[in-house]
Image (cartoon, rainbow over all chains, first blue to last red; front, side, top):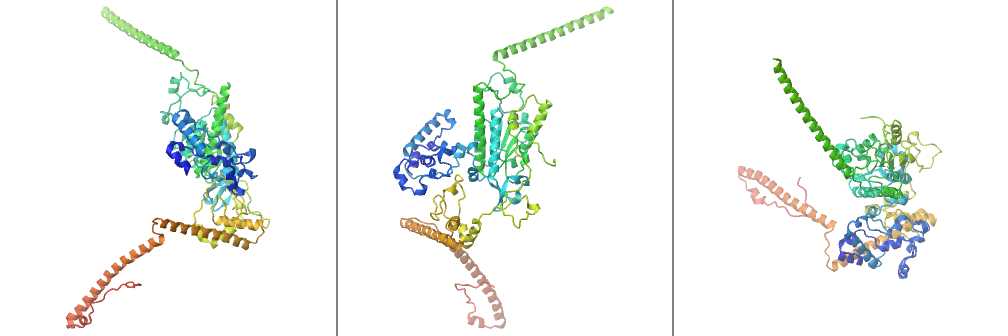
Length: 393
Length: 247
């Protein structure tokens, strides 16, 4: 195909996130610009937007399809100019060669769930079904506590109700947004194979932390030992690092998350148990064989499907991103939505530090001098006493 | 191990409220206000499941099964069972069950025929076409099945012809196809037959020598050369199509 050959000649990096413009055209509400091509198309498939029930038609166009035409460079381009140049080259190639070749029907692209995750507003029952979130485990493996989330039995497997999944997912998204707005630290955990990418992306968007390897028991209850090598920093309401807290940070207790989002609670019971001991709320994806009492906010869904986990992590990451944005916007207008820890106090400036060191040094010298004098004095009195003893004779 | 339910995760807000009231914490944690306004969902309650079955004889389901999820059934299920009972090898054809956006079912139009763009041709298309004919055109079951089936056979035949022609074209321009499964299995069978044959020859040799030994012993005793005259030595194995197994 012509498109691929030209792209390869220009370099491999230009193919970072393929988004053919032919795909954009078939998803938009506008008709095709080239009259010859519409004549060639069979009548029923000329334009998806002519179908009344289609979500792509009219003002109810899905956000996700709207955003396909506005692909933005990934934010790392701000740090690496080569990425920005490659992206611009890719866009030029797409513009010139995108209309050539066959019309590619809109289809599922796995990479798009990581590059452009869905927002809580994009959560529909169709999206959840396409992501296989309704497929539970064999009926013999179920936990009866989950019966309220199950729609029925099909082919020996429990089917999770899509409405329940959507409702619980939206609730969890609101919680993540609220915690991010109030300056809470969110930890995204997904220790199964293949979950690392979506967990890292979600944490990045929500401004939180991620974990995709085994949880070390005691990371919360024995954090001072296990997390002793982790760097801490003090930031202001605009997320800028503050100077003058080095001494306090050195002796500060290990940080604990304010909200934990877990994509596979069955394998992370210890993590959830530690959270309950420390009164940390948790969000977890509960399959038909999991225990819903382990988490504060269960999301009944299929934890064995990577696509489903990418959708859920993406939605929660987007919610966190929205919360962070709102928090920073409030800070810009002068409103701080969180309270600092009570023991932190004011920052200690350099001048103040030098002054304190000087005072400390003076105090030490004074003490040494006083001790020295006291020793000298005691020696003199001892000598006098000795002489006095001889005088008695 | 502690027994019973641990409901601490669901009661995080209530526990922290008590701690704050007793002044065990200097200030509420960052999540406090959010969780206050968004209480966790109810858990552990057994609700009556979605009813997929009609009530028969207006009797409630047996009490022990009243709260169990019910099997989901569709009218296509019977048609699927019938089709795949008649065409079991269609189950051997691989099927892609990946969905694009979940609206794939809205983009089909079974009035146009059994072949739909973006959808694989399989027993499922036969069933859907049959269902459309039954519901929209009021055809009886067997007639709709026959019509859908015939369209399906036509398309499968076309596929087979295309495959054969493509192979011939490729061979004409120099393609070298690997041995088919049948060829490979015939060669393996021939190999194992040859190895059996050489084993059988050795066994017959052994038997002959044993028999010779017996006869030779008899001849030396009585001084009779009848065996040698008859040429009893000359039992050889001839290759036949259906050799007998050694007893």
